[in-house]
Image (cartoon, rainbow, N blue to C red; front, side):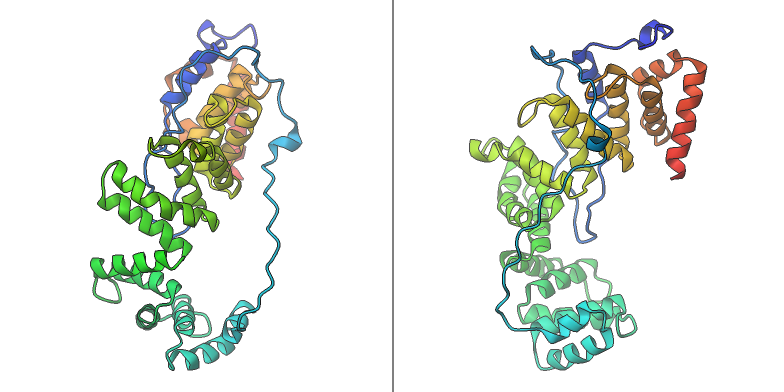
Length: 361
């Protein structure tokens, strides 16, 4: 750090940095990625960076390359399985954007009691595709599809019953359809049924009941569920060791899916050595990804990494920029404020200019 810094803004010890980072908390959780999702299962324990001494042999990094900072590599897509089932021509037309054709085909089948066609008709009426938007008629067709056992229809009708806008609100019936859709393997229903189980069963009991449904949803690629699995694997005492060892893997899958709260926690886990070895370079990389996406807590923590050269070279201007951005978003931090006031006036100006440019993008 430059010698003209105020004494109080000199680099802190590793233990002190981790302790200060923990105080920022993880309150800036992203909203669920899907509007189908309910609230989070629990507050993340991953956001707490423990006060700890720097392990032997681990020193602040010299930084990662620009290429490495650009983002995480997504895992390769699994090979497509050859489809041998019946061809749904209505859905095929829908996928190609031939909405009028798709609606005509689906409506004919829906009127004859075809559950999947009833769900498709309801979806098109909900979104106004091939027909004027009609929420009440859509609710009717979702109800028909649910009665005939279509998992997607049961899930959607459960949401309709929860809202109570176009049909009378009925929580008991909604919960029943959500459970049935989850048991039938609908990934969104699995996640939401897990949330319901937690809300109705306080404490570890609810988390343990919910975990199998989170796991099934996570396996199908729902990032919210992958994040929940990582948290429960890490925090529940009843989880066996072989599953606890997979907590970081599930968190990384959610992070790579673009879920910024998982990206924040992934960075913190790497810095703390939670669920695996400490890696300051990877911790910096994930916190920077989340910060660039606007996660306020990640911006706050990234400032400390720049100050203390953890995973990157020391850079007071970058540190100040990220602090300014997090402060503007309402996250106060006395330690970073002291640091900001201790740097040169021209460095403060550069940081503010960079923060302004970031917000204009």
